[in-house]
Length: 443
Image (cartoon, rainbow, N blue to C red):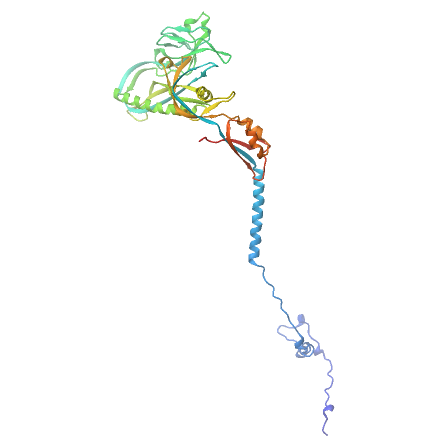
């Protein structure tokens, strides 16, 4: 009998242990889950395919330009802050001014300067020495007998000048005797700036006998001829140089031609070097003129050379030069040439442009003279001196806008400019050490 389709019913399948899925961690390697399990897991009719919608949101990376722009903005702000801090720390001010000035012309103007005095131009004498030697070929040997010699300073603390004859003796504490060749006159004591100073005189003395034993260092001397008198303690002497050149025996000699050649070479070089050294060593507030200087040369003992057949010829140069205080000389030479208000003083800008010379022979002995007669010629400029200490005190802590009224109290200032750091500050620092006063050159 044929079966109807409704009679064909698939019997309900009974659950079996085979239908239970095996856990992943219990499954053997490579073993797949049963196909029936897979079919149950994937049910295409459970969720219609056309009802599933997957959307994807695009995430844009940050802009490189924006990142770089922010980086440079950060650096710029940091630099501005750093500059602000530095300017705040290194704050200060500079006041630059142009002083009042005037031309100064001098044509063979005569004047007198004194070693001491309040009513005239005063001067002092600079003393400087320099030794130098040069190798020269020895021409042979000879027997010599030479006395040691050196320079001493004789002092006189009495009220009268003291005259001593030639060959006057000077004795060391050890009993060695040295003598002067010519008669000398030692000046009396004098009063300088309210205090007494003994008169003094430099002289060259020679040992009583030849020989090396009279070559000694610096020491004191008495005059044995004055012993037992009040002058024995009033007149005395002290070494200025060592006693040297004493010798008895054979010594290498130099030909007369070579001796004269070396002498001229040494004097030429010593003169230039000594004047240069003297100008360099003079304090800034003083000035020394080479034209008012003397150089005296003296022989020194020759010495052995490391080169066989040669000796070293030595010579000493002693410079004595007239010095003035720059301020005193400037004011003195300006008198009668420019008008100075009470209390005003001036400085000569370039005193080296002036030519000073001795106007008579009596002034040539600058060591012993009490005054010298001079003449001066030249054209230069003078500038009025400004009290910079007082000016700084007046502007401490003051607003910059008040600078004009403050400068009205300083007629020696022609013009001025002020620079205050940092730029946003409008007043000078309250600390005077942070203010610089600068004088500008005149035109």
